[in-house]
Length: 325
Image (spheres, rainbow, N blue to C red):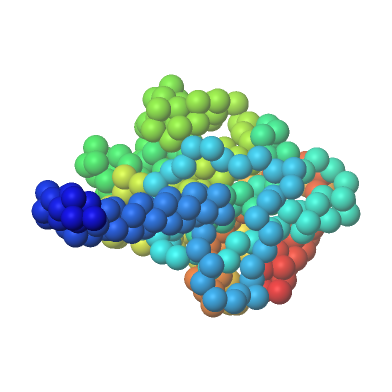
């Protein structure tokens, strides 16, 4: 018994650091549990893409049926992408019901600028005639030249008698073709295509072909929304105003999407059409929607052939109804 007690004392005396080792082992275990919890949280966040933040009547299903999502994510300037996302919208059924209720050729894409995802669509990658939507490419390239100082905003554009800034404004506000064509000539046809390919990321767009997909038009509208490369506040204000305030001239520029929404939604809009006197061969509408009451923004692009603008107005109304449900 004495020998055993002596051995025990000797063992204890040779392990004076044992209490410290126990503390370190305990701390290591706690750290391991913490890291495991963080890892699980990150995996959960990457899977679901948003944080649950209380109850919200606008929560929708995550999966968007039959509509591909954009794989390349774009930096959206000073948009509202940052912050906690508390709701996601699924507008696919709204799109499907609209598509199935009318004839003609239709392409639709709806993009949520909060969650950076497509929330509804049909034929988003089908080529359609752009009509006046080609002016979006011309105008954005023109604003970049003003921002860089290559163009003076008060310089006169060709034989229009208008300044560069006024021409850029009217090409959107009134879809003025003389202004757009003159600006395009100043940029150069090949030079514009190069800008569209290399700087806008639209390798398959040839502006002079007057053909594009709803997804490609959505991409240029994202550039306008984020005004990437355009930092001058006066230019940004001019861009916003030309898309939002469009008084009727010989045409009613607000008869499509803008007419389908209530006053609680601001619609920043560009149309392109071809009317043969009896029906619409082409009616295209590209809009940025600002749902002010919930601080959410969407891009909606509709490109059609053989569809009346009243049907596009109806789609706008149905989108607002679904989002506010």
